[in-house]
Length: 221
Ligand code: GDP
Image (cartoon, rainbow, N blue to C red; front, side, top):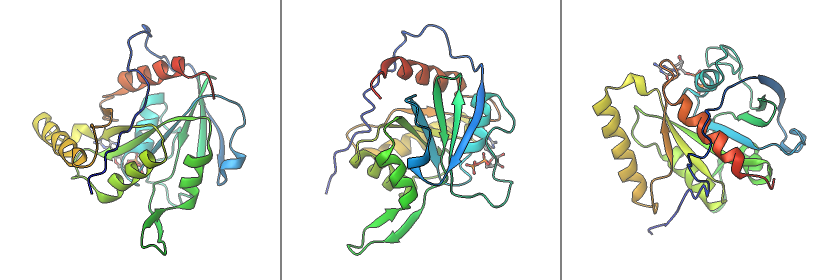
């Protein structure tokens, strides 16, 4: 079956926000296991998610220019929590735990952890998810299935290819092309994507400006 899917962010990657976003404040607010207990205010929210070790904490710390805002993998005992950070007092960055399959359901369909699916299905303030993919790896089934699941549930997302400094430019280009080819087997178009390196700061302006643009476009949360 050839599924036709689109990440359909519906947000313009416009240039109408002439000034790049400055991070004036970035504060941890709360960790939750339950989506119903997440902050109630109606600020736009951006979720960062990917398999563990993809470089999510490093990316969040790089974007916010804070060394220890998000915890990095070195620390043991990471729990499954929805972590809210308030940025510039006008949007939330949400650090989600790595996804995995919870179980194989009766219909033999793999399902993601309930905790993750509930967040995405119920969180009205969520405007966009950033799905982090390690740029060094071949397309991984779990990542592809997770993006399919987001699409089926009409959750807009963009991809971030992480750790780009670990590859030579040509190898990076080849990997992203291979990724696009794989996705285009079942997607209408390659989802909107960014390339990042937390050690070099690559992708910071593009990501922050994109969030600033989308913030200007969302008013009905
Ligand atoms: P998380 O589990 O997704 O939060 O991943 P971390 O941010 O803790 O990163 C996992 C490992 O990859 C750590 O050893 C990081 O130092 C390393 N890492 C993360 N991002 C980058 C990157 O952009 N470049 C390089 N060279 N290493 C990275």
